[in-house]
Length: 549
Image (cartoon, rainbow, N blue to C red; front, side, top):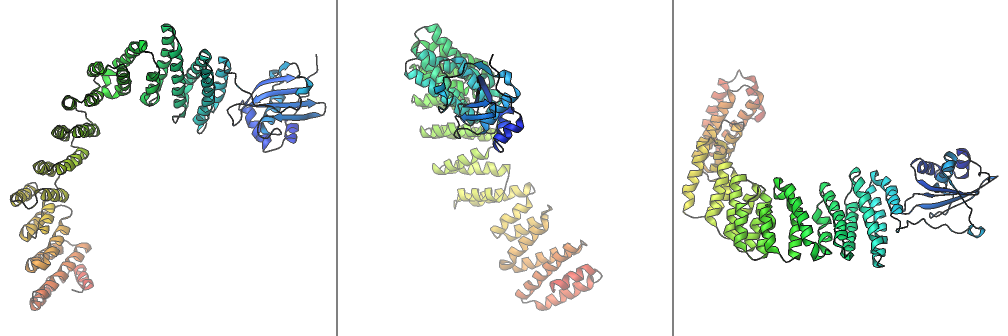
């Protein structure tokens, strides 16, 4: 028996290929990147998984003087981390190297080529997929897995083009089986799911070539498993599988596929049409391909596929039926109601669209629905509806914007004066004095504005009074003067620095109004009496001095 080549210590390996390649190679060895190891006399060989889809092939020649040479199929050609990984495998696990006959002398010195997976061997394909799945848990590992699967599937498609359908089917089946088994163990951003869909489509093309119905339906069952798993992962089956399932099947398989889809619809029926929507799309596409949309309409009713039923009736130019479906099966989602309504509008059923959204507004109170109706009422000149819509929102939550919207909708019509008084009276009735005062300021209804400000007891009471007094100064100076003096008196009774500061500010405005009214003597009499009355309030006196009052 030939003697084994010498085992090398890590220090010898490191001196042969130093860092950073030694450190990287050691990491490769520890992470299990070395496989398919053999020994041919004094030459050790192995595969090392690197950054490419195919592993690199590595050879090292050993002799009495240690390492005599090395080669690698990577871009460096040798003296690399892959060589380090193989040498460390020999150092730690020489028994794992299978003993084989040395190659002929002419082989030495030839450039190594990358190891290729034999696609005609399902087990080799399976092992390659399992190797690359090690990267699934890494950052963006799904891209690497998808790249590897893509190259395998490229090979399967080449087999199919060469009319080797049985071999191609074996590759497609192996890909789906292996990935489905481990898919839920890593995060996929959609790249791997796309490749699974591609494999399933390949299976469907293979099924279309199979004459035996039992054999063909065995392939279909494999495809169904893929679809079910994709649905469980939360990926839309319509995105990945829609065309795949329907592009290639034979007409003889339609009933078989339909029964399977209906079985999934029954399972999910308790959740309503939302959970069934993907399955429903598949069913509709199948029935459309079979020329049986009338049959789909009945099935859509059975499985409560209201959205698909609605769309199908519109496609068949039956808008009145579609409108009935929309109103009878109205959804809880404002967005879906709007979708239905816009399709009814496009079918020139504007009143039906209004009715659908109005019912949703009553049930849901959505701003989305409110905005949609506002725009459409304006577009179709439905002034009465627009006014009533704004009044409804006003009653829910009165504010200045809604008051403006009502005023704009009514315009200069004779309706506005009476409606305005009704709106203001409603505010007074419900104690909305702050808003009432602000609206009266806009319309220069000073008496009502000041009366509302005086009755306002909310946190903003002082600010509202100041706002009214300031607004009256130009058009109603006498009323503004009375307001400032009344407010200053009230603030003076509240002994704190901020109230004294505000009282001084009110008196300063009052002084200006006395001047405007040509009553400077009256001002002097008032301020003298005021100072005498409050002379013991040192904080107030300081505030008056600072304000120069």
